[in-house]
Length: 271
Image 1 (tube, helix red, strand yellow):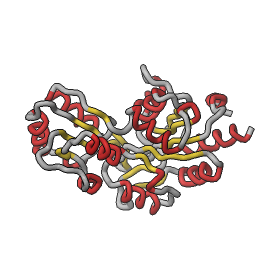
Image 2 (tube, helix red, strand yellow; image 1 turned 45 degrees about the vertical axis):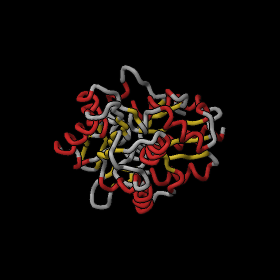
Image 3 (cartoon, helix red, strand yellow; image 1 turned 120 degrees about the horizontal axis):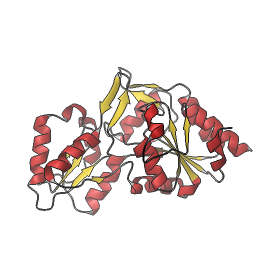
């Protein structure tokens, strides 16, 4: 039994990252499932444990993203996914903010019901090819021209993995805008504490009753631990061996993949 399994007493819920844990995105089919991950999700769902998928995906609406995962073979529903764009829309409406959007074309429908006239803030997501100099400069001009500039970022990841290799993530461009405008972004998504708390509320469990499984040592593992959860890092996705010597974040356990993590969790819960 893995050494970290002894810390699982009282676990009632599992929170899963998606990209790099369930599958690697990219390619003609939209991605490739990581071996054993489809079966691992099924095992969690039949175990009695509560399950929530917590993603920083901002290249598609939740509906389109879930449709893709279903085509890949995953048992997943839209109402099981906590994602940044819907959470950001709630914030915008609550604070009467009108965003200038620098996001992926496919996620724009998430903001259909948000007033975008005469922007008084900026929302930046993983815009992929939309991160051109022209678009970044236009976004900078909007932000620097505001009396009280507000920058909302749908995550702060440095990079992620697709089937053809690592790709720069939204955090890189968020930092550029922060530096240019001498401001600090408000992060909606992992590792923000409120984002994890939202997932826990939706599951109906307390932080100490949940375990996070992710491939990002800072945003998945570190973010969950700061919220009071246990956290495992998988050696898939963006994982690199140096993550296990991270100067600030130490996972509660390291596993080769999601399948291994789920087998150990379920075996421990049966004892």
